[in-house]
Image (cartoon, rainbow, N blue to C red; front, side):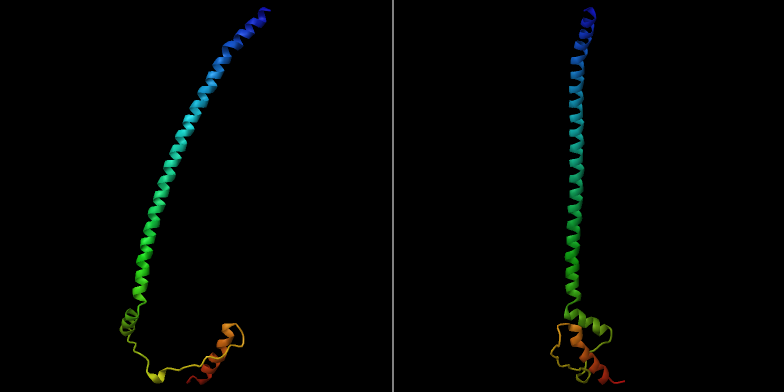
Length: 125
């Protein structure tokens, strides 16, 4: 019976110590996990701010490009560009008016073939 008391006393001594160690490891692991999670949240918020900043920059650039496109596509600017290239308005004899033919099918390419064939035959060579 003496042997059982010795073994039982050792188990009683290490049991609470193991429980305390396990609880300490659990708390330390939770603290490390919490700090890591807060770090990840901070890094992701920084990435989101950078992405929003880039988006605002791209939207601003897009607005500038839309305004530039509208300016370059305006009739006044196109007329100025044509004059700089030495182009002038067409003379009435240079304009050929084509009558629109009723389409035989719904395919727009087939509807343009007779017009293209006719203008190729009537074109001066």
